[in-house]
Image (cartoon, rainbow, N blue to C red; front, side, top):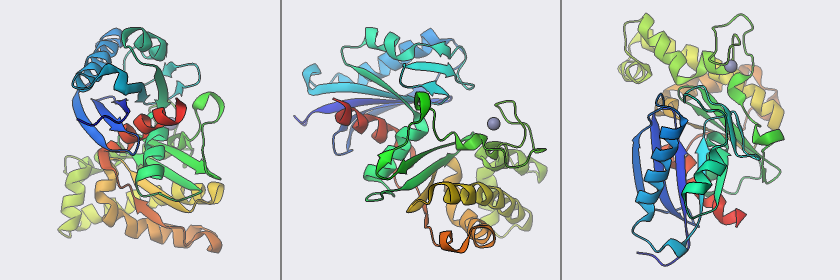
Length: 302
Ligand SMILES: [Zn+2]
């Protein structure tokens, strides 16, 4: 086993809990995951985090580990270490997750929004390396995001910047998990495509991509519809941030090649000409963007 300093990263999702041991250059030394007991209350989830972190740490000397980075879905007050109102995990309301976890483990603990952590991972080690300006979006159950602006990772007030999924795209659109209508994530996320899939008798987004690859006309129509909604939000982000590149991660990026046709069309129709050649890339680190990001951030903080 390596003697280099290591960090523990934990990526808490509404369905999966992942932990890893990470080197400063973004290599995963050990990885573990389990199902999140999201409806069993915050104390149970906290115990799960502690157990999984200690599990990945047990094969190395404790002094080799310099900290633990935890990322979770927002909104979080990452500066105060609080989960403010995480819709997918029961009881995560004004929950002082960082302080409580720090009492249970022998390492300093930092809290980060999961999409901002993934943005950092893709910036340092993935599709956005060497960019001074980038926008990352993750489209799965919802849509999250992050931005690097003039060489700095954007955090904003309370660390809550870049909740791109809640931009209103269609004021009379479908209801969003946040309570508003027509948010980007209610129209363009993986769950939005899951819902559209049912209208043509398919089970989910993945089935739509498979059918579209087999030239099923209805499936192709749904892919195009989703691509158009994705494109509308991406054009807004291009105009807002003028990034060197836009990176798409999350479950929907499994259909990246299919979606990118419609997205490019939308960009061509709606972006001002000087913005039209901004590259749109698929995330390079897959499921591990958040884990690698939040782990390597620890080395910058110590
Ligand atoms: Zn919303």
